[in-house]
Length: 320
Image 1 (spheres, rainbow, N blue to C red):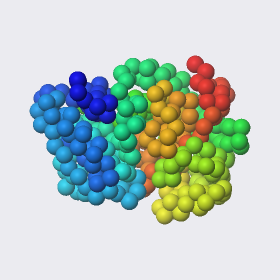
Image 2 (cartoon, rainbow, N blue to C red; image 1 turned 120 degrees about the vertical axis):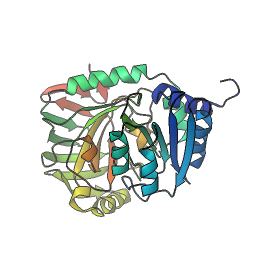
Image 3 (tube, rainbow, N blue to C red; image 1 turned 30 degrees about the horizontal axis):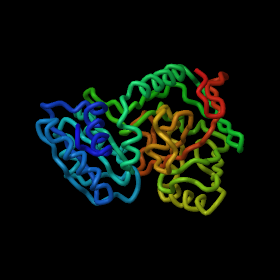
Image 4 (tube, rainbow, N blue to C red; image 1 turned 60 degrees about the horizontal axis):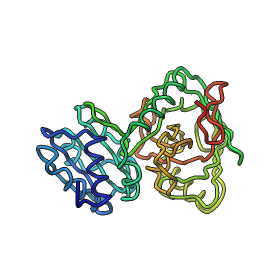
């Protein structure tokens, strides 16, 4: 790869090491006007790696979880591999789910930046895969999870029977889908069995890095009270826009990527090793019951986490 920039090398590595793009496959790159440069770089790097590469651009969506145009959703089902560097996420959309059901491998890259690609995709995935597997194994069979932090987070939720998802960013098998890059273990908590207080102090999708924490009081799964800085008012408006489902916690995840760093881009932030995140809204694709056109993640730094009554993360350090 002599003569390529670090960014171009990362794009090529993403397609080869993570997506497993093969010479006999067709790749579709879906992008928008805000991520055009990244989309076109992935398209350029794919040429020569696969049978044919296609590039298609849509208008950037207004919020995470909003569907792409029907024409794009149709094309997604007719190729072997899709990578989607877009401004907003369509990880939790019907279009993505239907493409996966057809056997298409889909790597979604919401809010992706060149820096994130260089940091997180230039490396071999082995270490992230190993850590992710260990966390998922430890989570298996757990009925209840509790998260606390020194600044006041104290929330407990039930997860018994819910599917545990290992997201490593390695998407080489038929129907694989997930973020690119990735590095997290996540699940959908039982929606009405989440109670307590969360102090978001890292970042929130759509808001970026938080200068002051946001307190969210959660009662039976729903955000009942959101207080703090002006960001708290913005978050409240974002959640209220989609009614009760939009205000309900749909996801809990643990970051497992040792190369990720907190940068204000939730795609990378939620993968930072030893952090945890909660998301409000859509979780239908991970085994939950919330089918809404919104999915808003928020990050908690340096958490202490109990799986049932066992301490597994202490102040951001994974103990096993």
